[in-house]
Image (tube, rainbow, N blue to C red; front, top):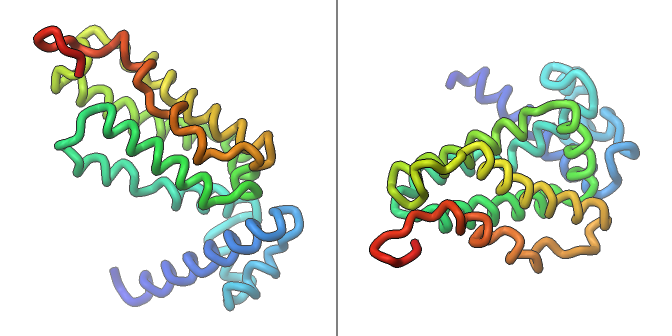
Length: 196
């Protein structure tokens, strides 16, 4: 990466971090592009180099929280499917909590109009499931699509309840929702009369 690209990346990150801080504190509707660029210490025009409108930054903020989960999981070959899914769920919950309620509300609204987060999660979770089938942890006839959507539904449901309760339901207290043991039971391959 050249010096120019490095500076551009730093400027974009400053804008994103400033927006994240302000939106968490005041809510998206109470924050202007001027507020964001002033907080970031950059010219207003810099904002429009990276984003068309204020709402576009919410998607980028959300993606930053989830960007590395897939990479991390790809490097965790020694974990079984339950451990990988539990790790994914923990990182997902941590990401949602890090975003905060105001950004999560905006992010959810934006994702209703764009399937990119669903596609990202589908790809990540279905890859975990495919690996588990290949490693004989799950039955060969496991319907990858159905199992993937069951797991995503648990994660999204948890986030939606948290948002709808305006954060009064503590995501941290809902670990049993995302352990996935019950969801996996019909798909687990039996090995020597023992369940994985």
